[in-house]
Structure formats: C-alpha cells, structure tokens
View 1 (cartoon, rainbow, N blue to C red):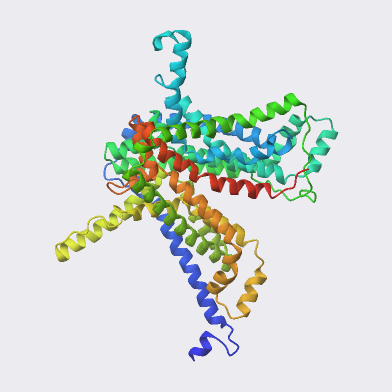
View 2: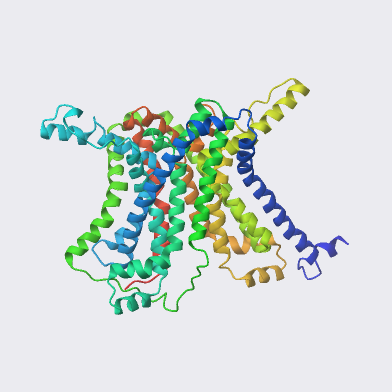
Length: 562
C-alpha cells in the first residue's frame, strides 16, 4: 500500500505524492510570507494602539516640520537624480564620444558610496576648517568667516546634493536599459521629420521610457526616505530623524510607530504614483529592437560636452570621495588598523553573508513555489513578501523589535513563573534581530531576480524531470539551480553589499557592544573624527564595486551597438 502511494513500478512519482509535495511548497511560501509581513503589521498595530498616545502632540508640534522637510528633501533629490540620470543615460546610449565605454559602467560607481559617507567626506573638505576654505582664506587674505560668504554644507540643500549624487544611478540604470530596448526606426522616423536629437529625446524617447524612469525615481526617493546618517549629520529634521529622536531620546516606542506609519504613507504614495504613471500603458518589443543602435556623430566641442556631462557625476560622486578616503586611510592606517576594526569587519561580513544566504534560500523558495502554483493567491504572496524593500530601515526596525521583544518577554515571564530563572533577550537582543530585519528588507532583491530568471526556463524541463521520477525539490536542485547559478550569485552580491551599507536598522537593532562597519563609521564621523572612519568607509565602498560592474555588463549585453 505504501509503495502504491509513493511510486509506481516504473519509479515515477505518484500523482498523490506529487500533489502533497507541491502543497508543502505552497504552505512553506505562505508561512514565509506571513513572517515577512509581520513587521509591517506590528508597526500599524502599535501605532493604532500605543501605550501612550502622543499623536495629538506630534501634530501640534514636530510632525508638520518633519513632513515639510522630508518633502523638500525628496523634491530636491528627485530633480537631481532625474537631471543627472536622464542626461547621462541618453549621452552614453546615443552619443559617440571619447571614453564612452568607460562611462557605461563608471556612471554606476556612486552606487558603491553610502550617502552618509559622502556627506562626511564633503563636510571635511568644505567645512570652515577644511582645505577648500583654508586655501581661499590664504589666497585672498580673509581672516575669518565674517570676511566672506561660503555655502553651508550642513544644510538641507547640502543633504539634497549629497544624497542626489549617490542615488542618480537608479534613474540612470533603468533609463539606459529602456533606451537600449527602443526601436532604432523611431529615431530614424523622428529625424526624417526634421526633429533634432534633443527634440527626439523629449517627444519620442522619454515618453516611451517613462515607466522605467518612474520606477528608478521611486526607488531613489524610497532610499532618500530611508536615509538617516546624512540628515542626522547635517541636522536636517526629516521623518527618519524624528523617529530616532522619539524612540531613542524620548523612549516612546508608540510615538515612533506613529511616525513610522507616516513614513509608510509616503511609501504607499510613491508606489501608487509609480503605478499610476504607467497605467494603461503597454509596450511590445519591436521587430528591430535588436538591430544595432547608430550613435550620433558630433563635433569635437560637443564630444567634450558629453565627456563633461558624464565625468562630473563620477568625479564628485565617487572619485573625489574615494581619493579622500584613500588618503586618510593611508595616513592613519596604523591607528585605524586595530582589533576594533578587525572585529567590526568580521561582524559585517558575518551579517552580510548570513543575510545574503537567508534571502537567497527564501527567495528561491517563494519563486519556485509560484512556479509550481501560479495562482492569484501566490502572486499576492509574492507582492507581500516584497513589501520590506519599500520600508525605510528605521520603520522596519520598529516593526521587528515589537514582535521579537514580545516573544522574549513571554518566554522570560514563563521561565520566571515556572523555574524562577530569567532567559533575558533571546531574539531582540541578538544578531538574529539584525538578520531578520535585513532579510525582510532585501528579500525582494533575491526573490525578484530568481522569479524573473525562472520565467525564462521552459516548463518542458520540469515535465521531463518529473517524468524521470524526480520530485519538485529534486527538480529544483538538479535542474533549475545549476541554470540559475549566475542569477543567484549576482542577487547574493547585491544583498551582501546592501547589508554592508545599511545604517538605520543596524543602529537600532544591534546588540549591546556590537558594531558593524556602518555603525563604526557613523560613530567616528559623528565625533568629527573622519580620519579614523576612513578605512572602514573605504572597505564599504570597495565592497560595492563588484556587483556594480556585473550589473553594467548585464545591461550592455542586451543590445549591440554600431
């Protein structure tokens, strides 16, 4: 009887067992999605039912200022990322000029620099005691700040510039991919009707690329909302800064959750606007969208303008900060290379590696479950599991600490009542809380990548494997994972680097006396000791370069150029 249930005489898996195995994948996906969504629900419930309701006080005092400053910051970053991202993407894609192939991937280098790191670097360069103002005073004989005017780097405008310099690659990356997918005949028809290259861009190219640009802009604005290191260092009072102040300084978790729900409302608005921007808009690949793109030939002065357009963001967004950090790291290497640096580096490597592996396993589970059950419900679960990526790190930290602390208190109370002993903080006071937060926040990266790659594998391969007696799990291991190896490595690298840079969630959730490279840099920079933070900051920057090069190569390989 057992043999009849498990397999037939030919060794092929029975339909009953196959159905049960397939259901296990569905149940696993449902449980995983529920755990991932738990932090979001925790934030909303805590905000609606806080121990101390300070919502009226927030509305009357600080919340309007937080919202106003956040809107100004996001508006400024939106302008910078759109201008730089679109200009460089169009220039690199459609114009022929010296160094074009270099700039194709170099434009992504600012991605490797966290916004708070570039803020620390430029503050050290442009502050009153920095080399720029010191040199100006020597040249012109100025004695103090009253003798001249110099823009204040620690301001809202300074924060907009710093964040915009490192987030424009979101728009550049997706806009360039959209430009590469467009049909060359569109350009030819537009030019034959008398339109210039600039007119063709605004009338033809940009409207078609609008959905991709909207996605890139929304991602950049979500990262702006997530930023804490820059706004804290520049004393810009955004919602993230207010959340930290309400929780860490005032000790009011309920109030922090209420500010967090306001930030979630911003996220919902961004996602809604992004989807609204591409409503009723469908695009289909043209027959000639794989034909070589013919670049514009220009005079030498115009070529130099193209070089300047691409070089300036790379110089100010990556090269200058990297050189400054490298110089500081070299000069203070003996002081920076110590046991604290080594321990914190190992902590970052452990957390980043663990989070990358965890998100990869869960992402494969969810994506493969959808392949087995491509139903409406499974599609909803995939979307819910990606909510964490849209949540700012500070908001996510609130959502993680609530259920974990509740579990720890329940276990501790039970042990005290039963055995008279205390268990302490099992989850909320350990590295588990950090890994959990990272997994929720970056799960969308791995799950989305694996899902997209799985869709390109023909279902006939699954059928062939199943006809040979392999279960769904065996099919995944023996057939799909070897094919997905490149995608898995890239997704793991991206998550690894994102975790290395993550600051807000790490600051809140890290255990006592536990530091990562990100918090290590933040502490020294906050104490105006940039030189001592240079080496760990440089390590974070260097770690982010590898996935950037991989992403650029993957995009460049989608289209031939002539």
